[in-house]
Picture: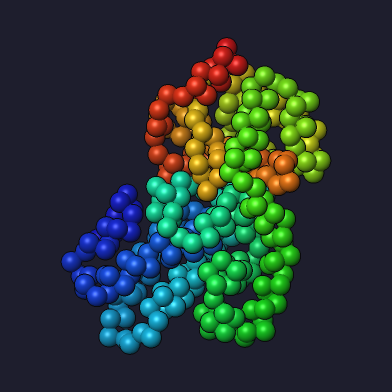
Length: 325
């Protein structure tokens, strides 16, 4: 039996698993979850797709498979496309404020996957703005290094059609790729400067940290949410002055006392806020050329569970307490 609480590992221990097929699937698991997470922006749904792929892999026990990885990637890709095409998903995915689920890539089992930088929040947001097929082609070709002919077979399209899809997708992700080039130290410096300026309400300092065309996206879930003074924005807010004024005004309206700590999420420095020991929100940045281009505030409680409990009391918690007292 599959247990969502324990993830796909529970399946791999089932009595129906044959040693050979179990070993092959286990070797591909991280690769498959990484693909599904990037496609869907949600780790729980990604694990569901991989679980379904496992069941189909078991069911194909009598079929001779030349390339297990290609076979499994095809299954997962098609399952994700079907998921994205469902009525429920179309409604959810169409929200302009929707952010991918933030993840600790080591704790989620994605840390061993190559090119982990392409799981950043900025990259994930751009992926969600692509059509499902553009997303699939871009990931399979540029992140997972598959050839157009392979991708065409997986998607049941022609190779020239896949090239056109890739060309369109690359135009959309060009700016996001620039936000993958900043070093972790530079990213952390800007994150800490941003949080420091917010805590003292320094609008001028915030503007200096942001690009002129900076954008903040605040995701409080489909129903919206207010936390720590941040009111859920119904759509992204653009412009350095507007972003800085919104963040300072929202914070000064009277934030509850929250614990917070610096974490590494989606491969980059971030801040997680806690109510008690449970995650309540996450702050992530998109940084390029020494400035903050994107501010992502994720406060959808339903999609923060994979961050886990607060690890320790931090000086950050005390600083936020003092700011809001």
